[in-house]
Image 1 (tube, helix red, strand yellow):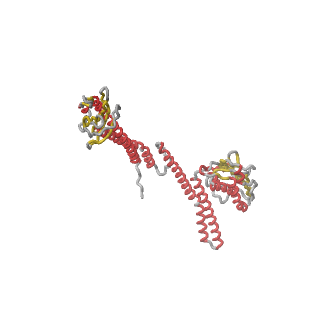
Image 2: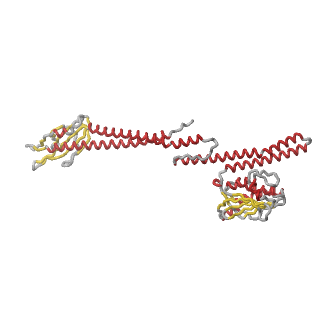
Image 3: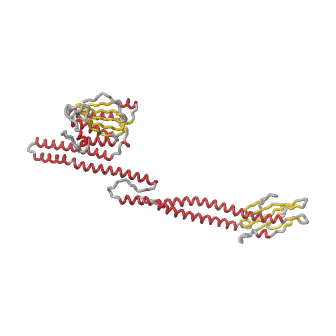
Length: 476
């Protein structure tokens, strides 16, 4: 199932509307409660004033009973809204109703205290009731009475509704304005991304240079990731182009030799001639295999990330093992191959690549040193660097030719089956892990000293003991 791409603009608007709806609902509830409180407070003041005016008109008649004259002006100030109705009652001593609606609900008022309020229902309509307890005095005795005034709640409900509707209208306008602002702000904020997309779309397919378009800080990480990917892609494409170009250049001669030997074998007059041609063709195929292996290694070096992603590696142990692997070939060539190591030396490198560099140096020495030569592989430290040396007492390389010797496909003066890739591969692998390769004369003045220097890592004493490196020379 294909997922449809989402819109940042719509998503931001949805979250804004949802958050505003929740907060707005809470605000409207609070506004409604505050409106009810304010409307009741205003109405209660009027009710209390009316009850107080009526209570001030109370007196005692000749028989000592409560007599009161209702000032209708006090009731008229309650009937400010035409849809509301006003009710009242005056109660004398318990059980005696002086005047008004006898069934009107009362609020629990305390004698001599302030007005008491209550919400109730009278004749099927909700009312707000205010009761005021006072006493009329004869100079000797006091006769208690209670004045109750009630009003229907239509006006205050309308007031509450009006306040709530005005608040809701303001909230809706605020949400609409915020949505419009977000829409415009997101559109303006996304313009750098649109420009970034346009720049990438307008690029030539071969242009893998870093993106330099100014972008917001939130997108810099993405641009950095894209630039890193393009850098790695460029390295991979360069490696592939180098590999294909070098392969086409270097494999042409071995393949021509193979075809020639196959043609000679086909025209051979005797079996020995055919076998000789086949042997030469097989040697050419083996040579092509070695070239292809070195080219693949070069392509891997071209696309590798370097020492940052490599793990610590014990260089002395690696060099010792590789020296031991080359002893049979050295014995066959009549060369004395040995190893000298002064203890563990740790570097940060990829074992396969660095091993290929060391093997290339040893193979190069065995190939060009000549019979009865002495080749020594040596590992040690100089300050903060790890040093690997491959020394031989062969003919060496003249100083003027050393720069060309570390160039790809350059061949030394000594004839042999070399392919001009051993030293360049070693140089590029050393550079990959932050090191360098130097070609120099050995101390005696004859021969070649190939020296790889790499940044060394700190080695503890326990690591030295666990490594178990034998410092005695290893010789063929």
